[in-house]
Image (cartoon, rainbow, N blue to C red):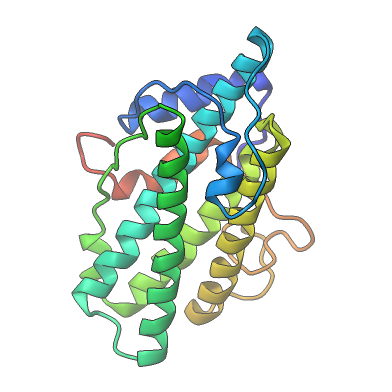
Length: 228
């Protein structure tokens, strides 16, 4: 498992990730993210070149998070459309999770748009191979996706400059982690494992963060071939 990178390596990794999934360049401030995610805080603009650079880095992280949320929202929508899950209680769970992920997408897109930047394009993930294998494969993938999502937010937390943005990102992170815990239980993962992407308490006491390149490797099978 890859370790957290230095600031310079993290910036390079973010740019490589966005390039590989077709992301555009980013610019602007991020103070509205907290509002978009339900916080009442105001927006504070950058006052010098250093703060502008920090804001640009934060926006890249938000674009990256948006890409992951697109994939999650698409996955659950496709599962529901396919009708592969029969148990009404499990169908409701997937509907609830899909709604959460779609609201994350809308909040992140609104933040970028309101600031005059263009949201990264939806990679339009392809999950047909998983869905065709049936319900068990769906829940295995769902557990993986949610564990990856939680680890991805955790991996970027040290690089977020704006404390309001960090608080908003962690608010999404905790929802992803709760999704992961529920789906881990449904799939049958043990409560604690040595694998950082399995178990409701991965690695026992502390969760393991994932950097962008590690996340890309895990989601690449679900990206269209021209983007993977």
